[in-house]
Length: 128
Image (cartoon, rainbow, N blue to C red; front, side):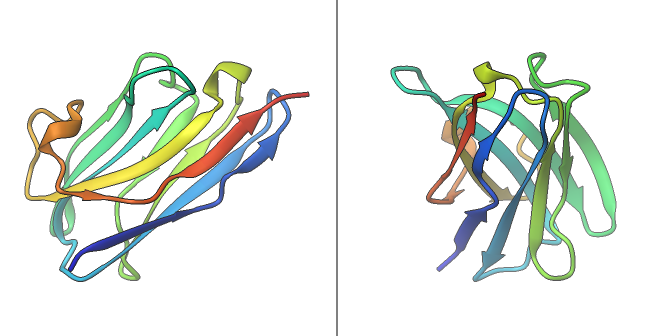
């Protein structure tokens, strides 16, 4: 059974940084799409970023417009851990962040329904 576990959330001041980790188990992650979504209270879960990996190659990296230039996604490494580096955080980035994944290349990477694997979520709060 595939498991994804997020860590690294917390409270940070506006303009600060956090790095979220997503550690996987239960399968090979060499040919895998890793994504991050977030959900704020009262809102739908929304796409943040995705990276499409085939072995040692990256086939695509995508970001929501709201995080472009501030967030960086990193694919699963040899320890089966991927990351979301978040810089210049804003109060509107406050949400529960989820990592998600699926084998192969997920073409509709922004859509939650195409992901088979989900983590439990980690809270990110940006506030002074």
